[in-house]
Image (cartoon, rainbow, N blue to C red; front, side):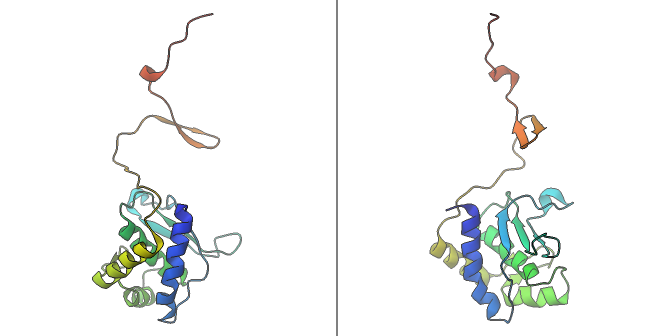
Length: 165
């Protein structure tokens, strides 16, 4: 199973929780990816409003440095609240977020104990997350941009020396 299939399976399971409080998050596209946020690695997720997408689909990204399955799902729940149409963190966002089990500062919610139990049960249902978190504080090798993205360049000491012909 891919990470995206896992996330979509989780969202489908969470749909009933949202529907039970009269909310519908539609059919967002959900991925692991950098959030595009100006806050860089601080942002754990991002929901891009359907009006921004050329095909009218809400796009949700969960940052690749989120460490645990439970945290991934808690971020997903937060972004699904945005997908319901509450793109800022005002009173309507807060009402829905609290109703689905999020707590804390609305710009950086965490799962309540009740939601944590729900998310851990969900993990048992859908299986383990098929991936691992990136560690942004790990030492990085020199990178260079190419047409298809970033490529890690080998260290000079690891390149085999070639003999002249």
